[in-house]
Length: 329
Image (cartoon, rainbow, N blue to C red; front, side, top):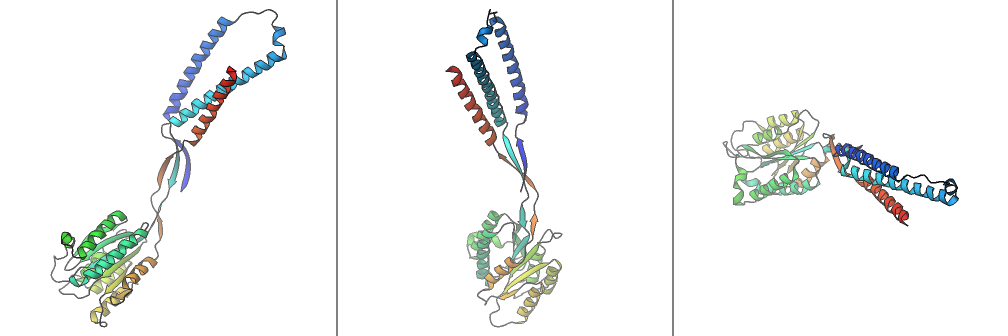
């Protein structure tokens, strides 16, 4: 953050005020000059009076009082004018955001509902600690659908994850959540799902930490457009780490072995759902992935700062009151 100095919201008021002040001063001067000319009279033998120490002391006191009155009036009027022009502190802020993108990629076939709901709830809690990280959500079954793209609008993310949790929990009012995931033939077409998630990352020309949290039952039924190993190669080419969650309950089968190889090939990690720490492990792994701080666009911040004119106006007011009271005594 860089402080650039003092500005005025309405600087034109100073020019208008200066012109008014000059006009008033000129009018007062002319009036006093005419009054002094009319009141002037020759007094004989006045030198003896003006030479008296008491007279000289009274004259000096008079001049001091008039000077204090004039300076205080100018100070009060000038400070009031500057205050009316709205002094502002101008600060240039260069915010930094974390360059970490996380795509939740959820297989929404029937066997995955409970795991998906837990993942969504976990990430909803995690969002509270985010500062600049972006999250997106893609769901898939026989086809993939983007629920929301990568965004750092956390209020929006929380609302969407709330809806996702209710839909995955079986709330019939949120059946529309699954729209677009039954347009193909088969179920759990994981290659297509992963490829869609990997392709959802934007800003490919920037150095960012990109992660896919990939939860699937890994039981493909049907012919996907993109095979799982092809989706894994796409992830490696785009620098995306895949963290896989797979219900491997009774030992690794061929499908589980393939998924493990694909996931670890992206420098990600593989978790069977029998692992009680799977979800927390994925969260820890994603958070441990280095996120580079990047500078966002600079922006100017303007803050009202009337402290100086208020203080000067107070000094001027005290001077006016003090000088006037002594003058009247």
